Every structure is written in C-alpha cells, then in structure tokens.
Amino acid sequence: MGAAERDEAARAAWRAEVAHWEPDDVVVLDEAGTNVAMTPRYARAPRNARAYDQAPFNKGDNITTLATLTTAGVAAAMTIVGAADARVVEAFVRECVVPHLRAGQVLVLDNVSTHKSAEVRRLVAAAGCHLRFLPAYSPDLSPIEEAFAKFKALLRQAKARTVAAVEVAIGQALDAITPRDARQFFAHCGYGIAK
Image 1 (spheres, rainbow, N blue to C red):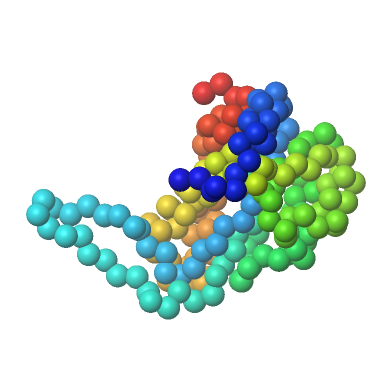
Image 2: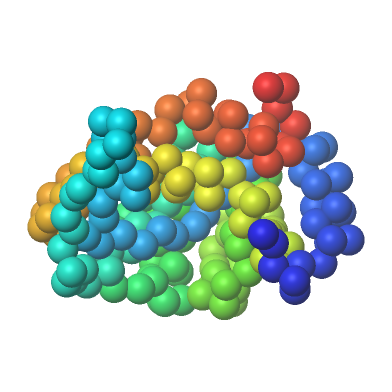
C-alpha cells in the first residue's frame, strides 16, 4: 500500500537521478522509535497449537535512535528519550554527522519538518556537501528504512525490558547491520550498485 499523496513523477525523477550518483558518496539520515515493550510479532508453534508470549502493556517512554547509513554500514548514531525535534536533529548533524562527511557527499533526508531547518542546511553546506530530500511519502526509496527494518526485528528478538537494556540492544542491533547489508539496501533502492 502506498500513500495516495505520492507524486509518481517526482519518484520517477528521483530514481533516475540516484541511479547516476556515486553510491559511496551518499549518506542517509533518519530516526526510528523504540520502547521497552518491543516483542516479536510472529512465532512458530507445533502443528495444531498456538504460540503464546507476553509483552508489557506499559511501553514507557519512546527511545528515538538517530542514525546515518552509508554503503559501509551505520556511520553515526545517537539515542534520546522522547521524540527528536528540529534542535535534536541539528545537534545530531552538527556533532555526529558533519565530522564524518567528506566534501561532495550527498546527505539524504526524508521530508519531515524537523529535517528542514535552516541550521541543518547551513551545516551541510559548510561541510561542502549537498542536501537532498526524498520525494514525499517515499520511505521505500530510502536505504536506511530497510536497515531500520532489520534493526527493529533484532530489537523485538532481544525483548529488552529496561531503558538500559534497550540502549545495549540498540547498539548490538546497529552493529549487526553489515556493509554487505548496507550495499544491498542501497542497491534495492536504486542507488547504482550491482546486486
């Protein structure tokens, strides 16, 4: 299912453009929310039996992971308790992203308003890089969304039930995203990598 608000012409233009980018020069930034109640959604059981499990009803505070993905894997990451607003994104870009950027790279973000601050634009431009926003309602064109799918599956398996345990599980899940995974995510999203 896709959003009715998608602009298919903008999505086609994006696909055509990124197919010509140098994939190793692309850095994708996004956020993912987690909590202490993450539990696998599916399970196996013997034939004619049900699979049972339990998850906390009280999910506690949301823990937001901000991360960047390159063809080499996760390049930078940070967590905060609560949601990421524009100031958090700006701090992440300033402290964690810009120090790892090379002049000429492209930083790709989705279209949420917290990504579109003048400070983020200034920081990326000062690093000699380009800032590009995905077409609206197009998470399927972002390699980091695929990385976050693996990340969340691993967090569900971990069943971390305290904030400290979630933080440890987040680190382990991010470390599990290999360079091979990252290259496949970029290839699947059309970034000019042979599969």
